[in-house]
Length: 107
Image (cartoon, rainbow, N blue to C red):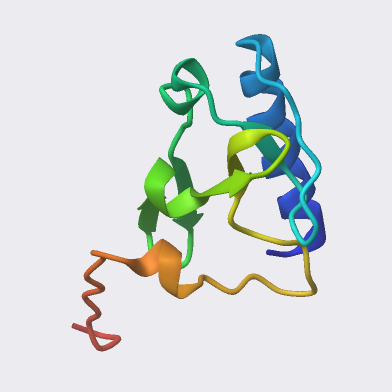
């Protein structure tokens, strides 16, 4: 995801989770990971991407937005399944069970 957008998403997600008692965990290769207690798993939110030009919205569910994994020290953790970059790429995980319908311009 574009760096500026990624930072906004990460800050917003972390702010919400921290407010509900989440414990941040370091995991190589991921920007935001938290200990995945039952309470925190219930707080994981969806993310909506709005495409103005197409007047479309893609809703990414918590299962598509977070990777669940086991950490030897922290136990089960949930990591935000996106990284900052020069452009936004919507990955395969975020597209699971998603159907895209397009129309030719002028229709």
